[in-house]
Every structure is written in C-alpha cells, then in structure tokens.
Length: 200
Length: 187
Image (cartoon, rainbow over all chains, first blue to last red; front, side, top):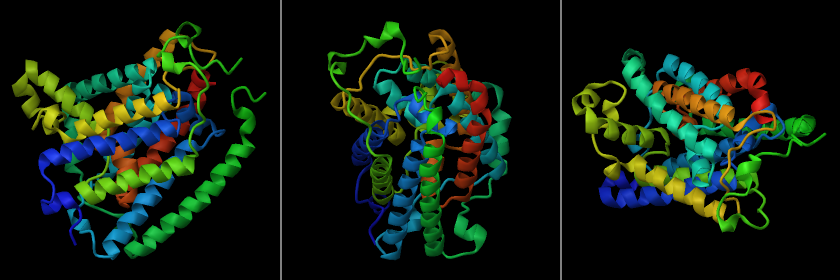
C-alpha cells in the first residue's frame, strides 16, 4: 500500500506543484475537448436538447469512483489518506442552489469559465472577474455565513455510511444509476431535439 | 438566424489559427472517461481531487493581503486561502495547468476565437453584465458549499461524499428552476 504517493512522502511538495500543472493540463484539455469552453453548449443541458454536461460529469464520476474502489480493494490505496470535504448539509444545499443559479445566468461554473477564458471568451473572463468580486463580497459582507457553515459541519460523511450499505455495493448502485441516466439523457435529447437553436 | 453565437463585431477576431474548419467536439462519454482518469490520477498521486474555487481564493486573498494583511488573516471567508501565496499553492498550479490545457486543445481543434458568446436575442453588454452577476452568485455558492462543480460535484461525487451529492442535486435544481427565465440569453 503506497498510494497516494504524496501521503507516503514519495514525492516532494515542489514535485507536487509540477504534477498539479500536469493534472490541470489534462483537466482543461478534456473540458475543452468536450465543448465546455462554450456557454451555450454548457447551458443547453438546462434546455434539454444537449445533455453533454450530465454525460461528461457522470462518466467522469463513475470512472473515478470505480478506480478508487478498485485501488482500495486491491490494497494499493489507503483511502483514509485521501482528503474528503466535510459535509454541512444546509450549506451545501444552499450553496448548490446559488451555484446552479449562477451557472444558468452566467453560462459557466468556475472551472469552465477558466477553460472558456483560455480559448478567447470575453464572457468567460468577465464571469471569472465576477467570481473574484463575489469572493470579496462574501468576505466583507457575510463572514457569519462562513461561521454558520462551519458550525453545522458533521465532518466526513459518505453515502455508504448514510445508507448503511457496503462501499462496493454503493459503487455498483452508482454504475447502474449512471447507466439509467445515460439512457434517459439520450432519450431526452431526441425528444427535445427541436428546441436546439436552428432546428426549425 | 439562431446560429449566431458570437457578436458579428468580434467574430472575425482571434488568432490566425482560428481560420479554417473547426473540429467536432469529442464524444461526451469519451471526454468524461478522460476527465475521470485525470481525477483518479489526482487521488492516487496527491491524495486529493480537482478543484477550481481555491485558486481564485488564493489569488484574491493574496491581492487583498497586499493592502490589508491583518484583515485577510482574520476574515472567516479568506483566511483559509492566506496561508501561502499563489506561487506555492497547489490549486493555483492546477488552474494554470487547466488554462494551458484548454488553450492547447482549442488551438489544435481550431476553436480559438475572441468572442462574447450569446444567443441572437441579447446584446453584448447585457450578456457581459449577466456573466459578471452569474460569476458573483456562483462565488458565494461555492464558498458556502466549500467547493464548486469540480471540487464538490466531480471530486466528492466520485468519493460518494454525502454533502457533495446534496450539492450536485441542488446545482441542477437551481439551474433548471431558473432556466426558463433566462432562456432568451441563450436561444
């Protein structure tokens, strides 16, 4: 068991920064390849004629989830050394709603606004500017919100713990759920294809 | 003429490489598989997932710290980003890498183009105002939720993190709920 490498001091902090550049490159590359530097491509998800956001997102989630489970089951990876963001249900529910609203109004989420800006998108760059302004407004005006979110944290909480079912079974359930969602997404795209701009 | 996705004024901008035929986008399942492998590599090598919010936070905290270091160091919303400057911050390098990765991908696919992307029924200024407002709202959301679509939905989603799944469902709920009212911006 020597994974994650960083936790076992097999790579230094500065090597970690170089690795971050490489991982980031792959991150930006696949987002751009998927068409996620385009606000209209991204927001089409919410008008049902192009479900690429759901397809890309859930394929990535399933791929990484299955890989994590396999690596842990094989004994290569110490899962307890992988950072898990603490759960704070109310804050994550409210934060998700706000981010979703920002997504459909602004056209991007934070990561895709970076890929858009990199490909020459003025609206992507302005979204990024708005994002930094939002961080400042949050810091100046709502410090008590941050304290509320932290106070209501329940620490690390995973779905296997919530539902009381084994890790592997939860991953299997996720794979089945994703397959059903992909079938649903293909059906939805056909059903609403006449909503695509230029379709009529 | 709903195929107009860029301002006529700006459409001819961009690098010389923008000339010529654009490539088609990658199959979404294949792109998702690639993205998933990058995320998995991050878990296995670094013991952490991907994220896009912390890099902006790091830059913001550093910039404000030039003017008001004591305030940043104690502010609940920023102090977490102030421990180290961007040039030794892991998430900052990740986002610099993402910028370069998207740039190279777009160049090779001939998708580099200076543009303001919008539907045919909205002007450039209104579109940019909405982009700014959307970014600001998303920032507050990402701060509250301790992550965005990358740090929570992708990363936490694949870790089966309960809070991340609540976040993900509520992102879709928020966007679908408002989509009808801003449809003229896009279609």
